[in-house]
Amino acid sequence: MDTKVGIDKLSVYLPHFYLEMDELAKARGAEVEKYTIGIGQNKMAVPTIQEDIIALGANAASLILDDEDKTTIDQVIFATESSFDFSKAASTYIHELLEIQPFAKSFEVKEACYAATAALQMACDYVRLRPDRKVLVISADESRYGLGTAGEPTQGAGAIAMLISANPQIFAIDMDSISITDNQFDFWRPSYSEFAMVEGSFSTELYQDIFKRVMSQLEETDPEKLSQIKAMTFHLPFTKMGRKALSSYESQEKSVFTKEDKTELLKQWNGHFENSARLNREVGNIYTGSLFLSFLSLLLFSEDIQSGDKVGLFSYGSGAVAELLTGTIQEHYLTALKKESVIQQFNQREAITIDQYEQFYNELLPADDKKHIIADSTKEEGFYLSEVDAHRRYYKYRN
Ligand code: HMG
Image 1 (cartoon, rainbow, N blue to C red):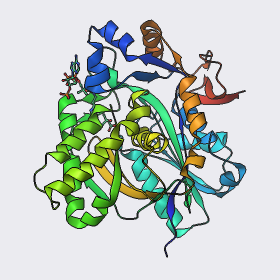
Image 2 (image 1 turned 45 degrees about the vertical axis):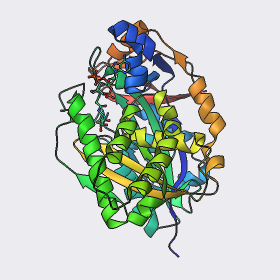
Image 3 (image 1 turned 45 degrees about the horizontal axis):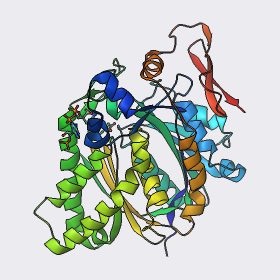
Image 4 (image 1 turned 180 degrees about the vertical axis):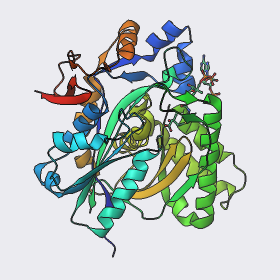
């Protein structure tokens, strides 16, 4: 039998501060229900300048790696669309901060919110050929549309770290998947722009259209596998997006399934959806990690999910590339996921006012060649950006 390969460990790390959606709604003259029901978000994670993608990513990874992992990791792959350097990969910092063995390779991948899935698939293929080795996949992003824009209530920030190995504790990933590319301008960020450009309503339509195309392809190529998927998780730029995708597939008439069978399948998926969106509701869009945050949420909160169940992960990145992964939940997933510490991290965050949010938002790193010590924004334990000197970023660990 083939060796199982997939997610052995998985963690999330969030900025310390968040903004309540009612605070944002009040400030922008919007009805709070538009944000909490219409878009489906309760809180938005707000990073400070010290919590850049390296700090977020290093903190996520440090929650899962032990000394043995550090000697067996051969690749550190960083997926992001919030990179601050066009040449040096974010994973080179992570490799040093986490003391990964020196003969590992480190690189960065990009394709909007799809990137972490590309990284995960590369990692799985690598481990399938070398089952005694491991790959660390990190996704970290800060989603920024600009103050007062339509996209603002869908912002967020955070990191997900995944350790990929043979015989994983959490999730064994099937080798076959369905991918699709469709060159579109739904959301993109030219290198000269600090903020993403977005065609808001077109982007939500394209997402649904691509989900339906992927589902039709799976119906045609492997309907049996599709019918075995107990829960479907989604890239969630905002939680309502997942509901929209589910109903778009529901209303697609052409299907290889009978009406009754498709209704039964979708009843199961809809039943799991709210639990798979619980963590995302409290954070916002963390771009390439959002799908895996939703996957974590499903595994932690859906009581009706158990080892042996097949789960689908629909990854969508604007531009656009999507992929539907499937896999099987493994026996020790709950022990490996450390539910209590995830909940504790979410609960220890601090709410900020709209003025504090705008102040953090507008703070940019100096772009000159002088030495700048970055003032502490929190007292939280972990890695943080401590200084910039001659355009070089330096990090420290706070106990
Ligand atoms: P908007 O135009 O301000 O909102 O922008 P709207 O008018 O479309 O309203 C949103 C929903 O709230 C609607 O529900 C309203 O009816 C409802 P829907 O018709 O969609 O079901 N609503 C209310 N509900 C209850 N009570 C009320 C109320 N008022 C209104 N009082 C939009 C919304 C999402 C377009 C905007 O925030 C945006 O542009 N966001 C960013 C783009 C985005 O997230 N696109 C998603 C697909 S693309 C993607 O996922 C990729 C991405 O993650 C990037 C990447 O890949 O890197 C973004």
